[in-house]
Image 1 (cartoon, helix red, strand yellow):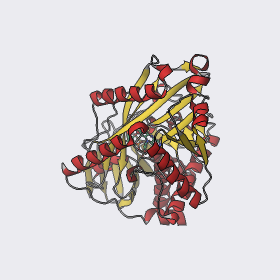
Image 2 (cartoon, rainbow, N blue to C red):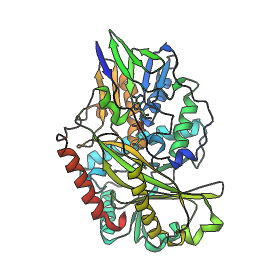
Image 3 (tube, helix red, strand yellow):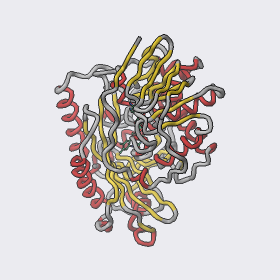
Image 4 (tube, rainbow, N blue to C red):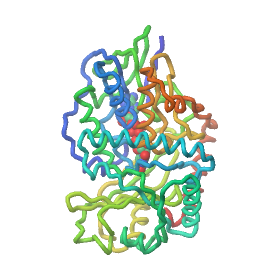
Length: 448
Ligand SMILES: Cc1cc2nc3c(=O)[nH]c(=O)nc-3n(C[C@H](O)[C@H](O)[C@H](O)COP(=O)(O)OP(=O)(O)OC[C@H]3O[C@@H](n4cnc5c(N)ncnc54)[C@H](O)[C@@H]3O)c2cc1C
């Protein structure tokens, strides 16, 4: 007998522009009865929905149920900047280049496996180019230090034979319209997604084989004999096997407590403008995607659909073990984002930011996932280390394979990673982590 009462439910502050501008084309249904299933997946983000798709492929006759506390794409899965990145992208190390060649190659191979799974999703479910765009990404540098970081990164890519291209200030200006950047490093393997459209497209695609209940937070998960039972306010699902795709909320289910860092990041999206108004000279080509040369800087993207463009700015990280942040914090950071945006696009000072929001990440100190069979029949695909479009997709696939007993070298490598290491007790962790983040953000300077 095992019983977990879930005390903390997800809350998402601010409205995500991705979600607000994405069209939902299938109905929302909450769980209203007691039902049984072969598989229960809790969490309908990248991890949960990828696990569901993988199970629907490997166990086509089985009954698979997904429960999410919120509406799909309203949580972090529909709040991110949409960079599906193949090359190393370690937020906690202060720069992207990685010393160990073999580990880097493994990481790239795993990231590409997840991206190719997502590419199959896009092809099979007919996702548009605006939703899934294999355009690559640029690490943009706005300072001497940023240029140095890009150069280190370039050398590490060169060492492992990864394709890349160096861009000078004029090429950056031609692409973005902005005079802000001194240079860039392009890598072709990243896919740029409209995250809310991707999540909804994936959910709609699997919905003929998978039952999805939204607005159905799991309030209690217990096991009697070999059966797990998840209770929601109006119903329950009983199943022999459960996959948790709840990211940092795994600790509410009694696992990995004291080992996960709950970090929030923030974004703002402009209102729509036409290329006639602010195209070409002002904002460059239709679409571009910039990561900061310093991981603590600003991620900036321009998207265009049906002739209308928007620019999205993501900055700042805060460690919030309470798993929630206030509207006031979002508003304060939105004002900082306005300044970052104006510095890059002085001609757009009157273009309003239509949406500002926050979203949760889950990191571990040793940059590993919270993965594996955590109790009999209960599997975790959590802790995405800030790159969940890719890492959570992979964790979901791997959790489904582990749970169905599909063996393979990829799963062996994935499940043989160490556990997330312990954090210092609170408030030491809060003070320490927030101080390191703030120091790194200030050091990022013009990159932010
Ligand atoms: C502003 C921002 C920018 C980002 N940019 C990028 C980027 O460019 N690239 C990238 O790869 N990542 C990015 N991320 C991170 C990315 O969004 C996350 O890594 C990703 O969403 C994690 O996916 P997941 O499926 O593991 O978890 P989530 O997307 O958090 O999904 C977990 C789901 O579990 C559900 N849940 C939790 N508790 C319960 C419960 N008790 N009962 C039922 N359901 C529950 C939640 O409602 C949620 O839908 C960004 C995040 C933010 C906020």
